[in-house]
Length: 626
View (cartoon, rainbow, N blue to C red):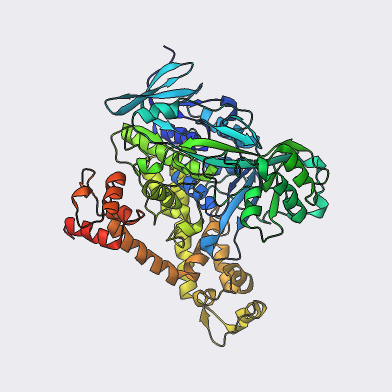
């Protein structure tokens, strides 16, 4: 017997598996991470980037709770941009280009520094279930491996099938085998599975691209970071580039439609609505004569580039000819073709909000096996599954984040309540309280939770306390002190806003959309002198951004908090797991069947189930004595 008995066994070494293993181990569990290939732990299968719209908020939330994705990104990024700066702060989203080679290497190093994370390269073919509880797995080489809790994070590898034109072959991603057996074994216990599809673009030799005819996209002049810790500052950024398809490109692509596995019906799984293939784009948006292509570097030590926006499963010859018709790619040398991949996933309504299976105790699912797409969504689920598997081991209640607390809460609630029939991707529009769930205040929302459960360090809590103290002092000064026309009007005139005639509080001026806090500090000497006292603090820039948002949007924030508190009262009305919804004749049969199937944990979750009406909720409230 070469294996010990483990507290937690993680199946899969992708972004979900890494966060799950790291979180559980750092909390004190003895963890075994089993993956098909130890050389591809935390591999970036698709684009070499972390963050983006709403996804950047998730990475900051992972970091605030004590997860590691933000730290790894900061150590390995080659470009940083804050997206949506022209919009309100609820829409600001950090995004980083990562070095594809360094990112998984850094993750491997961080995992190996944790003494109670152990590794095994193998294929998992079954979950051992005894008396309704998962108690280990069966591995192709290793045989039975016992564990108190099992977390499945197998990504796109379960019965993965790769499509390129009329060709199809088994694989979890190009050049790697798929995993079979696990889906059918879980079906024996009543766990349902379905199929999804995703895809990836061609990779091109950057030496063969003419970047001079493209639009250069540089990183931010003063790049920020994902982690709230003092991670390295990014210098010497690499540029991305922007180019476009054209009618000739579309014409060539249409030549391959007869051989398309998607249009030919050979792909049965639903594809991602918000990240479609290039052939899907030109079919769905036929009136458009061009589409954006973002050319992204793979890293400092590689000439390989990622053609974001050119995902395709058409024959290689069609992909090549179409790409050669794009400006700048006339002489491009393709390194890898684009392809589509179909894989098994387990509809997430079968999970509790803790990500534990409703069918088998001590079995957790996280990542793309729950129907999501994206490294960030996967990592967030892995973190929560790892935390809750450890807490189950210790006899503690699970951590369940509310929709008003975090995008992670929105993500998981959407999955377990509504499910998904297509790869789920997070957007700011999915969060009803997005003004509260900003990227700048993720630490204020979540670090105390992370510290309380033992994952966020004392260093994080100390840093948060200093930041909040400084924000409080800054806000009090802005609301109490005033400026004069002589001191500030030159700045107001430059900002093209109305000049003042009398003394005016700084906070009142900051309400104007044209006025920024940094701008006022640069003009008013009294304000500059006050803020200079904080400038040596390592949290100064973060505090400055947060206090401006708090003052400028105070009315909106207060209204949002009130709405969140109203919804929270519904979340506090708990529904028993043994509640017999079929006995409620005042609710429609559709409503009763959905409630009986999903078994919502509280009234709030019940109200978000598709098909459940306000009158159904009223019936439930009556039965709760409300």
